[in-house]
Length: 496
Image (tube, rainbow, N blue to C red):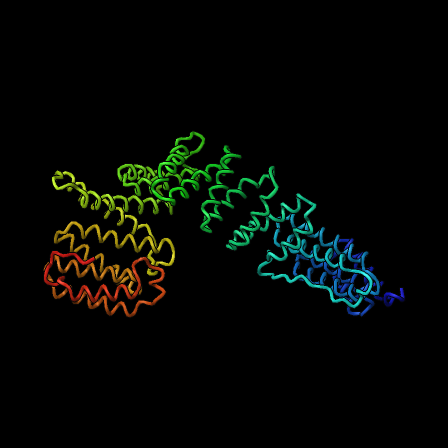
Protein backbone atom coordinates (compact mmCIF):
# COMPACT_ATOMS: atom_id res chain seq x y z
CA UNK A 1 0.00 0.00 0.00
CA UNK A 2 2.79 2.40 0.89
CA UNK A 3 4.35 1.71 -2.49
CA UNK A 4 1.32 3.03 -4.39
CA UNK A 5 0.11 5.88 -2.19
CA UNK A 6 -1.33 6.86 1.11
CA UNK A 7 -3.92 4.62 2.73
CA UNK A 8 -6.47 7.47 2.68
CA UNK A 9 -6.23 7.71 -1.11
CA UNK A 10 -6.72 4.00 -1.48
CA UNK A 11 -9.75 4.17 0.82
CA UNK A 12 -11.34 7.01 -1.16
CA UNK A 13 -10.75 5.12 -4.43
CA UNK A 14 -12.39 2.03 -2.91
CA UNK A 15 -15.37 4.12 -1.70
CA UNK A 16 -15.76 5.39 -5.28
CA UNK A 17 -15.83 1.82 -6.57
CA UNK A 18 -18.48 0.90 -3.99
CA UNK A 19 -20.63 3.95 -4.80
CA UNK A 20 -20.46 3.16 -8.50
CA UNK A 21 -21.38 -0.48 -7.91
CA UNK A 22 -24.42 0.70 -5.94
CA UNK A 23 -25.55 2.95 -8.88
CA UNK A 24 -24.51 6.26 -7.28
CA UNK A 25 -22.34 7.73 -10.07
CA UNK A 26 -22.30 11.31 -8.74
CA UNK A 27 -21.06 10.18 -5.28
CA UNK A 28 -18.55 7.89 -6.99
CA UNK A 29 -17.25 10.77 -9.12
CA UNK A 30 -16.75 12.89 -6.00
CA UNK A 31 -14.75 10.12 -4.34
CA UNK A 32 -12.54 9.58 -7.40
CA UNK A 33 -11.88 13.31 -7.74
CA UNK A 34 -10.87 13.47 -4.08
CA UNK A 35 -8.51 10.56 -4.69
CA UNK A 36 -6.78 12.40 -7.52
CA UNK A 37 -6.51 15.63 -5.50
CA UNK A 38 -4.67 13.69 -2.76
CA UNK A 39 -1.83 13.11 -5.28
CA UNK A 40 -1.21 9.40 -4.76
CA UNK A 41 1.14 7.35 -6.91
CA UNK A 42 0.47 6.88 -10.65
CA UNK A 43 -1.18 3.47 -10.27
CA UNK A 44 -3.82 4.79 -7.85
CA UNK A 45 -4.31 7.93 -9.94
CA UNK A 46 -4.84 5.77 -13.04
CA UNK A 47 -7.42 3.66 -11.20
CA UNK A 48 -9.16 6.81 -9.96
CA UNK A 49 -9.22 8.33 -13.46
CA UNK A 50 -10.67 5.12 -14.91
CA UNK A 51 -13.33 5.11 -12.20
CA UNK A 52 -14.07 8.79 -12.81
CA UNK A 53 -14.46 8.08 -16.51
CA UNK A 54 -17.00 5.34 -15.82
CA UNK A 55 -18.94 7.64 -13.49
CA UNK A 56 -18.90 10.54 -15.97
CA UNK A 57 -20.16 8.24 -18.72
CA UNK A 58 -22.98 7.07 -16.48
CA UNK A 59 -23.88 10.75 -15.98
CA UNK A 60 -23.95 11.28 -19.76
CA UNK A 61 -20.80 13.42 -19.78
CA UNK A 62 -19.02 11.42 -22.47
CA UNK A 63 -16.48 14.05 -23.51
CA UNK A 64 -15.32 14.44 -19.91
CA UNK A 65 -15.24 10.65 -19.56
CA UNK A 66 -12.87 10.30 -22.50
CA UNK A 67 -10.69 13.06 -21.05
CA UNK A 68 -10.48 11.08 -17.78
CA UNK A 69 -9.38 7.99 -19.73
CA UNK A 70 -6.69 10.06 -21.44
CA UNK A 71 -5.49 11.17 -17.99
CA UNK A 72 -5.30 7.50 -17.00
CA UNK A 73 -3.06 6.87 -20.01
CA UNK A 74 -0.81 9.73 -18.87
CA UNK A 75 -0.65 8.21 -15.37
CA UNK A 76 0.46 4.89 -16.83
CA UNK A 77 3.43 6.57 -18.50
CA UNK A 78 4.76 7.33 -14.99
CA UNK A 79 4.38 3.78 -13.67
CA UNK A 80 7.70 2.01 -13.02
CA UNK A 81 6.79 -1.18 -14.92
CA UNK A 82 4.67 -2.07 -17.94
CA UNK A 83 1.05 -1.14 -17.03
CA UNK A 84 -0.43 -4.19 -18.74
CA UNK A 85 -3.05 -4.96 -16.10
CA UNK A 86 -4.19 -1.32 -15.85
CA UNK A 87 -4.25 -1.01 -19.63
CA UNK A 88 -6.39 -4.15 -19.88
CA UNK A 89 -8.78 -2.72 -17.30
CA UNK A 90 -8.98 0.59 -19.17
CA UNK A 91 -9.47 -1.13 -22.52
CA UNK A 92 -12.32 -3.32 -21.23
CA UNK A 93 -14.00 -0.32 -19.60
CA UNK A 94 -13.92 1.67 -22.84
CA UNK A 95 -15.10 -1.28 -24.98
CA UNK A 96 -18.01 -1.83 -22.60
CA UNK A 97 -18.97 1.84 -22.90
CA UNK A 98 -18.74 1.61 -26.70
CA UNK A 99 -21.11 -1.36 -26.65
CA UNK A 100 -23.52 0.49 -24.36
CA UNK A 101 -23.57 3.54 -26.64
CA UNK A 102 -24.12 1.34 -29.70
CA UNK A 103 -27.06 -0.37 -28.02
CA UNK A 104 -28.54 3.06 -27.30
CA UNK A 105 -28.10 4.14 -30.94
CA UNK A 106 -25.51 6.78 -29.95
CA UNK A 107 -23.12 5.87 -32.76
CA UNK A 108 -20.97 9.01 -32.57
CA UNK A 109 -19.97 8.42 -28.94
CA UNK A 110 -19.73 4.68 -29.57
CA UNK A 111 -17.15 5.30 -32.27
CA UNK A 112 -15.21 7.76 -30.12
CA UNK A 113 -14.98 5.24 -27.29
CA UNK A 114 -13.99 2.56 -29.77
CA UNK A 115 -11.21 4.77 -31.12
CA UNK A 116 -9.96 5.30 -27.56
CA UNK A 117 -9.94 1.52 -27.03
CA UNK A 118 -7.81 1.19 -30.14
CA UNK A 119 -5.39 3.70 -28.64
CA UNK A 120 -4.94 1.52 -25.56
CA UNK A 121 -4.00 -1.42 -27.79
CA UNK A 122 -1.53 0.75 -29.63
CA UNK A 123 0.10 1.79 -26.36
CA UNK A 124 0.16 -1.80 -25.11
CA UNK A 125 2.03 -2.91 -28.22
CA UNK A 126 4.63 -0.19 -27.65
CA UNK A 127 5.05 -0.77 -23.92
CA UNK A 128 8.25 -2.45 -22.86
CA UNK A 129 11.48 -1.97 -20.93
CA UNK A 130 12.59 1.63 -20.81
CA UNK A 131 9.14 3.02 -21.54
CA UNK A 132 8.51 4.46 -18.11
CA UNK A 133 9.40 8.00 -19.22
CA UNK A 134 7.48 7.79 -22.49
CA UNK A 135 4.75 10.39 -23.03
CA UNK A 136 1.75 8.42 -24.30
CA UNK A 137 0.37 9.47 -27.67
CA UNK A 138 -3.06 11.01 -27.38
CA UNK A 139 -5.90 10.44 -29.78
CA UNK A 140 -6.78 13.82 -31.25
CA UNK A 141 -10.59 13.82 -31.25
CA UNK A 142 -12.52 16.71 -32.71
CA UNK A 143 -15.81 16.72 -30.83
CA UNK A 144 -17.43 18.77 -33.61
CA UNK A 145 -16.41 16.12 -36.15
CA UNK A 146 -16.41 12.86 -34.16
CA UNK A 147 -15.99 10.60 -37.16
CA UNK A 148 -12.64 11.94 -38.33
CA UNK A 149 -11.08 9.45 -40.71
CA UNK A 150 -7.92 9.00 -38.64
CA UNK A 151 -9.97 7.79 -35.66
CA UNK A 152 -12.02 5.52 -37.88
CA UNK A 153 -8.84 3.95 -39.26
CA UNK A 154 -7.58 3.37 -35.74
CA UNK A 155 -10.83 1.82 -34.56
CA UNK A 156 -11.27 -0.27 -37.71
CA UNK A 157 -7.77 -1.69 -37.44
CA UNK A 158 -8.54 -2.61 -33.86
CA UNK A 159 -11.69 -4.45 -34.99
CA UNK A 160 -10.29 -6.10 -38.08
CA UNK A 161 -10.79 -9.58 -36.61
CA UNK A 162 -14.30 -8.82 -35.37
CA UNK A 163 -16.38 -8.76 -38.58
CA UNK A 164 -19.67 -7.76 -36.96
CA UNK A 165 -18.11 -4.87 -35.05
CA UNK A 166 -16.06 -3.70 -38.02
CA UNK A 167 -19.10 -3.71 -40.33
CA UNK A 168 -21.17 -1.84 -37.74
CA UNK A 169 -18.42 0.71 -37.25
CA UNK A 170 -17.97 1.32 -40.96
CA UNK A 171 -21.70 1.61 -41.58
CA UNK A 172 -22.04 4.17 -38.78
CA UNK A 173 -19.19 6.16 -40.33
CA UNK A 174 -20.85 5.95 -43.77
CA UNK A 175 -24.08 7.38 -42.40
CA UNK A 176 -22.26 10.17 -40.60
CA UNK A 177 -20.14 11.10 -43.63
CA UNK A 178 -23.28 11.14 -45.76
CA UNK A 179 -25.05 13.48 -43.35
CA UNK A 180 -22.23 16.04 -43.29
CA UNK A 181 -21.44 15.79 -47.01
CA UNK A 182 -17.85 14.53 -46.80
CA UNK A 183 -17.82 12.92 -50.24
CA UNK A 184 -14.21 11.69 -50.34
CA UNK A 185 -14.45 10.03 -46.94
CA UNK A 186 -17.86 8.63 -47.83
CA UNK A 187 -16.56 6.94 -50.97
CA UNK A 188 -13.55 5.53 -49.13
CA UNK A 189 -15.71 4.14 -46.32
CA UNK A 190 -18.16 2.63 -48.81
CA UNK A 191 -15.29 0.99 -50.70
CA UNK A 192 -14.09 -0.58 -47.47
CA UNK A 193 -17.57 -1.69 -46.50
CA UNK A 194 -18.39 -3.53 -49.74
CA UNK A 195 -14.92 -5.10 -50.08
CA UNK A 196 -15.01 -8.81 -49.25
CA UNK A 197 -18.62 -8.84 -48.03
CA UNK A 198 -21.34 -10.87 -49.70
CA UNK A 199 -24.17 -11.38 -47.23
CA UNK A 200 -24.44 -8.26 -45.04
CA UNK A 201 -27.93 -6.75 -44.90
CA UNK A 202 -26.57 -3.27 -45.66
CA UNK A 203 -24.64 -4.39 -48.73
CA UNK A 204 -27.36 -3.50 -51.31
CA UNK A 205 -27.81 0.10 -50.04
CA UNK A 206 -24.02 0.43 -49.73
CA UNK A 207 -23.47 -0.57 -53.37
CA UNK A 208 -26.27 1.70 -54.53
CA UNK A 209 -24.88 4.65 -52.54
CA UNK A 210 -21.38 3.93 -53.83
CA UNK A 211 -22.72 4.14 -57.38
CA UNK A 212 -24.37 7.47 -56.58
CA UNK A 213 -21.16 8.83 -55.05
CA UNK A 214 -19.18 7.73 -58.13
CA UNK A 215 -21.77 9.39 -60.36
CA UNK A 216 -21.50 12.63 -58.37
CA UNK A 217 -17.71 12.43 -58.73
CA UNK A 218 -18.09 12.24 -62.51
CA UNK A 219 -16.95 8.62 -62.61
CA UNK A 220 -19.93 7.44 -64.67
CA UNK A 221 -18.37 4.14 -65.73
CA UNK A 222 -17.80 3.10 -62.11
CA UNK A 223 -21.32 4.25 -61.22
CA UNK A 224 -22.81 2.05 -63.92
CA UNK A 225 -20.80 -0.94 -62.72
CA UNK A 226 -22.16 -0.58 -59.18
CA UNK A 227 -25.72 -0.07 -60.42
CA UNK A 228 -25.40 -3.18 -62.56
CA UNK A 229 -24.21 -5.21 -59.57
CA UNK A 230 -27.26 -4.12 -57.62
CA UNK A 231 -29.53 -5.07 -60.54
CA UNK A 232 -27.82 -8.43 -61.07
CA UNK A 233 -27.48 -9.48 -57.44
CA UNK A 234 -30.59 -7.96 -55.83
CA UNK A 235 -33.20 -7.65 -58.62
CA UNK A 236 -36.19 -7.86 -56.26
CA UNK A 237 -35.12 -5.23 -53.72
CA UNK A 238 -36.03 -1.56 -53.65
CA UNK A 239 -32.39 -0.69 -54.30
CA UNK A 240 -32.70 -2.37 -57.72
CA UNK A 241 -35.54 0.00 -58.64
CA UNK A 242 -33.43 3.04 -57.83
CA UNK A 243 -30.41 1.49 -59.56
CA UNK A 244 -32.50 1.15 -62.73
CA UNK A 245 -33.46 4.83 -62.66
CA UNK A 246 -29.90 5.90 -61.88
CA UNK A 247 -28.52 3.74 -64.70
CA UNK A 248 -30.95 5.33 -67.15
CA UNK A 249 -29.91 8.81 -66.04
CA UNK A 250 -26.21 8.01 -66.47
CA UNK A 251 -26.76 6.42 -69.89
CA UNK A 252 -28.73 9.45 -71.05
CA UNK A 253 -25.83 11.68 -70.03
CA UNK A 254 -23.62 9.81 -72.53
CA UNK A 255 -25.56 11.21 -75.47
CA UNK A 256 -28.46 10.52 -77.88
CA UNK A 257 -27.09 7.14 -78.97
CA UNK A 258 -27.85 5.85 -75.45
CA UNK A 259 -31.37 7.30 -75.20
CA UNK A 260 -33.14 4.12 -76.41
CA UNK A 261 -31.34 1.97 -73.84
CA UNK A 262 -32.13 4.43 -71.04
CA UNK A 263 -35.76 4.71 -72.19
CA UNK A 264 -36.19 0.94 -72.13
CA UNK A 265 -34.92 0.72 -68.55
CA UNK A 266 -37.44 3.32 -67.43
CA UNK A 267 -40.39 1.94 -69.36
CA UNK A 268 -39.72 -1.52 -67.94
CA UNK A 269 -39.75 -0.09 -64.43
CA UNK A 270 -42.95 1.93 -64.94
CA UNK A 271 -44.80 -1.07 -66.36
CA UNK A 272 -43.62 -3.44 -63.64
CA UNK A 273 -46.64 -4.27 -61.54
CA UNK A 274 -44.54 -4.52 -58.37
CA UNK A 275 -43.92 -0.76 -58.17
CA UNK A 276 -46.61 1.86 -57.51
CA UNK A 277 -46.69 5.62 -58.16
CA UNK A 278 -46.13 6.23 -54.45
CA UNK A 279 -42.60 4.81 -54.73
CA UNK A 280 -39.73 7.22 -55.05
CA UNK A 281 -38.29 5.19 -57.94
CA UNK A 282 -41.56 5.43 -59.91
CA UNK A 283 -41.65 9.20 -59.48
CA UNK A 284 -38.05 9.63 -60.58
CA UNK A 285 -38.46 7.21 -63.49
CA UNK A 286 -41.47 9.08 -64.84
CA UNK A 287 -39.69 12.43 -64.60
CA UNK A 288 -36.46 11.12 -66.13
CA UNK A 289 -38.33 9.45 -69.01
CA UNK A 290 -40.12 12.74 -69.72
CA UNK A 291 -36.81 14.59 -69.87
CA UNK A 292 -35.33 12.03 -72.28
CA UNK A 293 -38.38 12.21 -74.56
CA UNK A 294 -38.07 15.99 -74.58
CA UNK A 295 -34.40 15.85 -75.51
CA UNK A 296 -35.28 13.48 -78.37
CA UNK A 297 -37.80 16.00 -79.67
CA UNK A 298 -40.73 13.69 -78.94
CA UNK A 299 -42.67 16.52 -77.35
CA UNK A 300 -46.15 15.01 -77.60
CA UNK A 301 -45.09 11.91 -75.65
CA UNK A 302 -43.18 14.02 -73.12
CA UNK A 303 -46.22 16.25 -72.55
CA UNK A 304 -48.46 13.22 -72.00
CA UNK A 305 -46.03 11.76 -69.44
CA UNK A 306 -45.69 15.06 -67.60
CA UNK A 307 -49.45 15.58 -67.50
CA UNK A 308 -49.60 12.21 -65.73
CA UNK A 309 -46.83 13.37 -63.41
CA UNK A 310 -48.53 16.57 -62.22
CA UNK A 311 -51.79 14.63 -61.79
CA UNK A 312 -50.15 11.89 -59.72
CA UNK A 313 -48.28 14.39 -57.54
CA UNK A 314 -50.63 17.35 -57.00
CA UNK A 315 -48.77 19.07 -54.15
CA UNK A 316 -45.29 19.87 -52.88
CA UNK A 317 -41.91 20.04 -54.61
CA UNK A 318 -42.76 17.17 -56.97
CA UNK A 319 -45.75 19.06 -58.33
CA UNK A 320 -43.70 22.24 -58.74
CA UNK A 321 -40.91 20.46 -60.62
CA UNK A 322 -43.48 18.67 -62.79
CA UNK A 323 -45.23 21.94 -63.63
CA UNK A 324 -41.95 23.53 -64.64
CA UNK A 325 -40.98 20.60 -66.86
CA UNK A 326 -44.43 20.50 -68.47
CA UNK A 327 -44.42 24.24 -69.11
CA UNK A 328 -40.92 24.12 -70.53
CA UNK A 329 -41.74 21.22 -72.87
CA UNK A 330 -44.76 23.16 -74.12
CA UNK A 331 -42.50 26.19 -74.69
CA UNK A 332 -39.79 24.22 -76.48
CA UNK A 333 -42.29 22.39 -78.65
CA UNK A 334 -43.82 25.75 -79.61
CA UNK A 335 -40.49 27.00 -80.90
CA UNK A 336 -39.93 23.70 -82.72
CA UNK A 337 -43.30 23.87 -84.47
CA UNK A 338 -42.77 27.47 -85.49
CA UNK A 339 -39.11 27.42 -86.46
CA UNK A 340 -38.98 24.06 -88.23
CA UNK A 341 -42.31 24.06 -90.00
CA UNK A 342 -42.04 23.67 -93.81
CA UNK A 343 -42.83 26.65 -96.00
CA UNK A 344 -46.16 25.16 -97.00
CA UNK A 345 -47.14 24.36 -93.41
CA UNK A 346 -50.86 24.53 -92.79
CA UNK A 347 -52.30 27.30 -90.62
CA UNK A 348 -53.16 24.58 -88.11
CA UNK A 349 -49.46 24.02 -87.38
CA UNK A 350 -48.87 27.67 -86.59
CA UNK A 351 -52.07 27.79 -84.57
CA UNK A 352 -50.89 24.84 -82.51
CA UNK A 353 -47.56 26.60 -81.91
CA UNK A 354 -49.41 29.66 -80.58
CA UNK A 355 -51.67 27.47 -78.46
CA UNK A 356 -48.64 25.81 -76.87
CA UNK A 357 -47.09 29.21 -76.13
CA UNK A 358 -50.34 30.13 -74.41
CA UNK A 359 -50.43 26.91 -72.37
CA UNK A 360 -46.78 27.34 -71.41
CA UNK A 361 -47.40 30.92 -70.21
CA UNK A 362 -50.36 29.74 -68.12
CA UNK A 363 -48.38 26.86 -66.62
CA UNK A 364 -45.44 29.11 -65.74
CA UNK A 365 -47.91 31.50 -64.11
CA UNK A 366 -49.42 28.66 -62.07
CA UNK A 367 -45.94 27.57 -61.01
CA UNK A 368 -45.00 31.08 -59.88
CA UNK A 369 -48.07 31.18 -57.68
CA UNK A 370 -46.87 28.01 -55.97
CA UNK A 371 -43.24 29.00 -55.46
CA UNK A 372 -42.12 31.19 -52.55
CA UNK A 373 -40.70 34.60 -53.40
CA UNK A 374 -36.91 34.48 -53.78
CA UNK A 375 -34.93 37.48 -55.02
CA UNK A 376 -31.65 35.58 -55.13
CA UNK A 377 -31.53 32.32 -57.15
CA UNK A 378 -29.15 30.65 -54.72
CA UNK A 379 -31.19 27.46 -54.37
CA UNK A 380 -33.18 25.26 -56.71
CA UNK A 381 -36.50 26.94 -55.96
CA UNK A 382 -35.04 30.41 -56.51
CA UNK A 383 -33.44 29.42 -59.80
CA UNK A 384 -36.66 27.77 -61.03
CA UNK A 385 -38.61 30.92 -60.11
CA UNK A 386 -36.18 33.06 -62.09
CA UNK A 387 -36.44 30.84 -65.17
CA UNK A 388 -40.23 30.66 -64.87
CA UNK A 389 -40.49 34.46 -64.84
CA UNK A 390 -38.26 34.78 -67.90
CA UNK A 391 -39.87 31.94 -69.83
CA UNK A 392 -43.38 33.22 -69.16
CA UNK A 393 -42.37 36.63 -70.48
CA UNK A 394 -40.78 34.95 -73.53
CA UNK A 395 -44.02 33.10 -74.30
CA UNK A 396 -46.06 36.30 -74.10
CA UNK A 397 -43.48 38.04 -76.28
CA UNK A 398 -43.83 35.44 -79.03
CA UNK A 399 -47.49 36.35 -79.75
CA UNK A 400 -46.23 39.71 -81.10
CA UNK A 401 -49.53 41.47 -80.55
CA UNK A 402 -49.96 44.82 -78.76
CA UNK A 403 -51.76 43.39 -75.73
CA UNK A 404 -49.39 40.48 -75.25
CA UNK A 405 -46.33 42.66 -75.88
CA UNK A 406 -47.43 45.02 -73.11
CA UNK A 407 -47.99 42.01 -70.84
CA UNK A 408 -44.51 40.73 -71.72
CA UNK A 409 -43.10 44.21 -71.03
CA UNK A 410 -44.57 44.11 -67.53
CA UNK A 411 -43.19 40.61 -66.98
CA UNK A 412 -39.67 41.55 -68.11
CA UNK A 413 -39.70 44.65 -65.91
CA UNK A 414 -40.58 42.40 -62.98
CA UNK A 415 -37.54 40.23 -63.78
CA UNK A 416 -35.28 43.29 -64.07
CA UNK A 417 -36.44 44.67 -60.73
CA UNK A 418 -36.43 41.37 -58.87
CA UNK A 419 -33.00 40.24 -60.07
CA UNK A 420 -31.24 43.57 -60.55
CA UNK A 421 -27.91 42.14 -59.34
CA UNK A 422 -28.12 39.06 -61.58
CA UNK A 423 -27.38 38.59 -65.33
CA UNK A 424 -31.07 37.71 -65.75
CA UNK A 425 -31.81 41.43 -65.40
CA UNK A 426 -29.60 42.13 -68.44
CA UNK A 427 -31.57 39.60 -70.49
CA UNK A 428 -34.78 41.27 -69.35
CA UNK A 429 -33.59 44.75 -70.38
CA UNK A 430 -32.58 43.49 -73.82
CA UNK A 431 -36.03 41.99 -74.28
CA UNK A 432 -37.65 45.21 -73.04
CA UNK A 433 -35.69 47.07 -75.72
CA UNK A 434 -36.82 44.49 -78.25
CA UNK A 435 -40.48 45.05 -77.32
CA UNK A 436 -40.12 48.80 -77.72
CA UNK A 437 -38.67 48.24 -81.16
CA UNK A 438 -41.63 46.09 -82.13
CA UNK A 439 -43.95 48.81 -80.85
CA UNK A 440 -42.03 51.39 -82.87
CA UNK A 441 -40.42 53.15 -79.86
CA UNK A 442 -36.84 53.22 -81.17
CA UNK A 443 -35.62 55.95 -78.83
CA UNK A 444 -37.04 54.16 -75.80
CA UNK A 445 -35.37 50.96 -76.95
CA UNK A 446 -32.02 52.76 -76.97
CA UNK A 447 -32.64 54.04 -73.43
CA UNK A 448 -33.31 50.51 -72.22
CA UNK A 449 -30.00 49.32 -73.65
CA UNK A 450 -28.25 52.21 -71.90
CA UNK A 451 -29.87 51.11 -68.65
CA UNK A 452 -28.56 47.61 -69.27
CA UNK A 453 -25.04 49.03 -69.67
CA UNK A 454 -25.31 50.90 -66.35
CA UNK A 455 -26.71 47.84 -64.63
CA UNK A 456 -23.86 45.69 -65.96
CA UNK A 457 -21.36 47.69 -63.91
CA UNK A 458 -23.23 46.97 -60.66
CA UNK A 459 -23.58 43.21 -61.06
CA UNK A 460 -20.91 41.42 -58.97
CA UNK A 461 -18.47 39.07 -60.68
CA UNK A 462 -19.63 36.08 -58.65
CA UNK A 463 -23.12 36.45 -60.14
CA UNK A 464 -21.69 35.79 -63.61
CA UNK A 465 -19.84 32.75 -62.28
CA UNK A 466 -23.18 31.23 -61.19
CA UNK A 467 -24.92 32.13 -64.44
CA UNK A 468 -24.94 30.39 -67.81
CA UNK A 469 -25.54 33.57 -69.79
CA UNK A 470 -21.98 34.68 -70.51
CA UNK A 471 -19.41 36.67 -68.58
CA UNK A 472 -19.04 40.42 -68.10
CA UNK A 473 -16.84 40.84 -71.19
CA UNK A 474 -19.35 39.00 -73.36
CA UNK A 475 -22.13 41.30 -72.23
CA UNK A 476 -20.03 44.44 -72.72
CA UNK A 477 -19.26 43.44 -76.31
CA UNK A 478 -22.86 42.53 -77.00
CA UNK A 479 -24.28 45.82 -75.70
CA UNK A 480 -21.72 47.89 -77.61
CA UNK A 481 -22.53 45.98 -80.79
CA UNK A 482 -26.29 46.27 -80.22
CA UNK A 483 -26.20 50.03 -79.67
CA UNK A 484 -24.11 50.58 -82.83
CA UNK A 485 -26.05 48.20 -85.12
CA UNK A 486 -28.97 48.61 -87.48
CA UNK A 487 -31.18 47.67 -84.57
CA UNK A 488 -32.64 51.14 -84.13
CA UNK A 489 -33.42 51.54 -87.78
CA UNK A 490 -35.15 48.23 -88.29
CA UNK A 491 -37.90 47.56 -85.81
CA UNK A 492 -38.47 44.08 -87.15
CA UNK A 493 -35.07 42.79 -86.02
CA UNK A 494 -35.19 41.04 -82.67
CA UNK A 495 -32.40 41.68 -80.21
CA UNK A 496 -31.22 38.42 -78.73
